[in-house]
Amino acid sequence: EEEGAGAGDAKRAKVEEGESVAAQSPDKAAAKAMLPAPPLEEAEREVEAKCGMRLTIGSRLDVLWEVGDDGEEDGEATEVWWHCAIDSLVGSHAELGPMFKLKYQPKVVDGATFPAEERIVTFSAPNMLVDTGGEKSYDEEESRIMQWRLEGTTPVLDPLLPAGTTVCVRPSAPPAAPAGDAPAPAVEEGELGVVAEMYSDGTYLVALDDGGTRDRVPRNLVEAVDEEESDEVVAASIDSFFELFIASMTGGALFQALPAEKQRIAAEKFASWRPIFREELETHMEGREDEVTGQDIQSIIPKVMQRAKELDAAGSVAPATSGPQG
Figure 1 (spheres, helix red, strand yellow):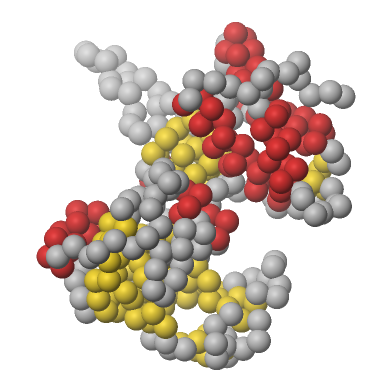
Figure 2 (spheres, one colour; figure 1 turned 180 degrees about the vertical axis):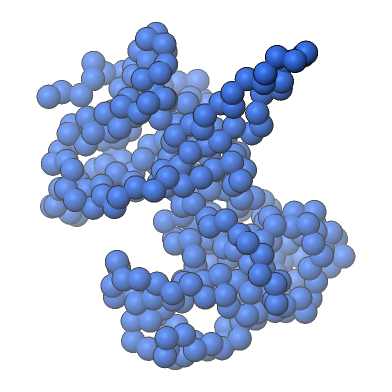
């Protein structure tokens, strides 16, 4: 809650803490401490290489925030472009690069007054920054990816896609046309999946319905798929939750179109994730006595996919099971 704002009103990042840089960064062991600042000219060149434009002390920006009532988890939030200016170069981060202090102007939103404040950020990609979660240092748990623009400009920006978002990954380019006058082959259809991670450079790790993954996918190739909200109770136990997941992964059109042998291999891979699901679900549901909901599924899938990816990278897999028990 911001001091000076109405009771319950809070300014928060467009991407919430659940989608923090700590969960998205490819190197989760990145140093937390702020390192000494590089020379300003060197920092400006690094930012220009990442963002495609020159930013310096005094540059005026707008950063996209949300304003809502923290007391109402499901309440609607108002998106606000907040005016600020780059005040100074304050340090550097081992993975994220030069760290700058932004000074925000006071603002009134929906009758609530928010005072001026300072935030430490790094610029990570065109129109993207990492708010480090604090006014004086880097807080790995509180950091989050946000969008920005130069003050007075109105670029059309695709919305960020938090982990758990159902998406379609489009082909990077149509196949090359064959030689001669033969017609070009049809463009491959997109692949359905779920966002497992969002990286600070604006790319995504997507877990596909057929069991594969697509890593470092540019935002222009990822399209959110509209779905009805699924907060109703969908499972009452770990086994029924796992059955629901297996059904969702093997019921898609892309999976069904795979050759029988590839379907078998993918299904066995999904089944081997049961121990990971059990651990993550027990952690997620700790202290709760209610049943698993669709929102719980959306929360847990990216964590399971990340652990499965790490096991694969390490050359090992979770013990396979004979499948969910009825």
